[in-house]
Image 1 (cartoon, helix red, strand yellow):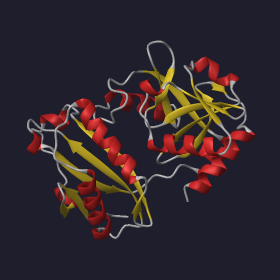
Image 2 (cartoon, rainbow, N blue to C red; image 1 turned 90 degrees about the horizontal axis):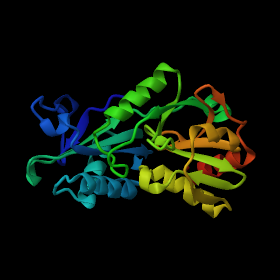
Image 3 (tube, one colour; image 1 turned 180 degrees about the vertical axis):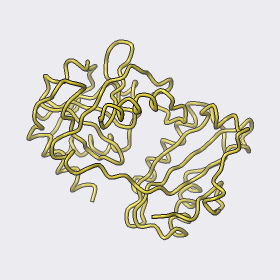
Image 4 (cartoon, rainbow, N blue to C red; image 1 turned 45 degrees about the horizontal axis):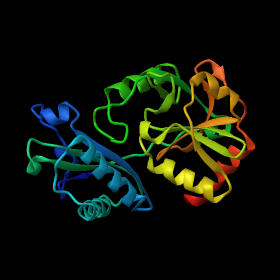
Length: 269
């Protein structure tokens, strides 16, 4: 679908005007934060959580701006109505400036990418990549390391790259959160080292409501094969099981993980 309009600081403009001047040093240096919100049947999902995280990202990296959650929600609603949206991804880019009044908020509508259904049946392949994000809790535009890791994953025919910190532990994917599962216990890397994904929070809430327990644990890539299963989560993929890490195959997707996938699918309809 072609979307004809975007929103810039609350003003609806033709998509042809969605440009960034080459002289914008803040954008060039990644001094900005972003969010991706899925809209289904014209309704943005988990919008309050996404916008709260956008505000927190700006606070962490020091972006001063005058945008409010209520104001952004109104801008999103106006854009959705103007583009007559059924299903799309809403990309929010809040770029800082030298002063508070120079910050800009652009909201774009993008066609969503749906993973191949066979990946949910068989699991996906991932690789590992040594990289640590500077501000783990900020969803910033400083994405070079993640971009290079994801590029390596695509070159290898993999779904994503799992980032490995200097201590040798997996933290997260380039655009996903990572977990292992043993029985009905879900293991997550420590929260102070990862982006606190909105879908991650929803999945863990669903799990706890259905008798699963959750523990924080440092996990090395070479230890993942000892767990019953492993998976990643994101807005686009929901719960995506992992089949192999590099050349190391994992066990078949466990019954407990299949159950969690079904439970979350029912909850998110």
